[in-house]
Length: 166
Image 1: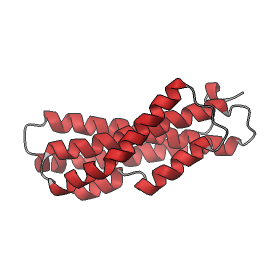
Image 2 (image 1 turned 45 degrees about the vertical axis):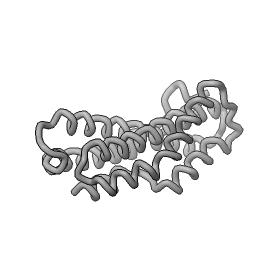
Image 3 (image 1 turned 90 degrees about the horizontal axis):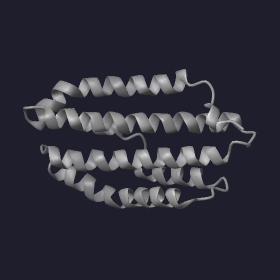
Image 4 (image 1 turned 60 degrees about the vertical axis):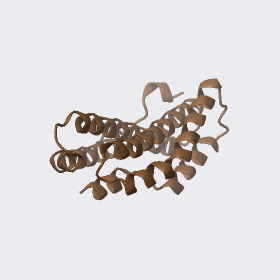
């Protein structure tokens, strides 16, 4: 159950995060100080990811190793989401509305999955039992929420919000 949950929560493999990062910066992105800080946070999280994964795979039954891995992955998702929204704000005048809408949906999905993973960590930390019992008890709810987030962002978001339209 743990492995299927982690596999489902991994919205993209590590190679795809580099592609996502490229997609954000390919459109003449002008980075300000805040964007640079968020980008360094993203690069830090990518650098820590192999260590976090190795720790999780070695100590599967410990909540602290799962927290390290999921927390790092949530940091990657949040920073990518934030950078993408900042990029979309700079591209308000572009005519490619369909591509920008797809990017907006992707940003929303990554943000909500990161929040979902954070909520899972909170629930597991306040759970009185072991890590395995907590995952057995709450894992199905997280998978259901993940599917719900996917469906709502793909089907429910039909247009760009006002702050992303010229």
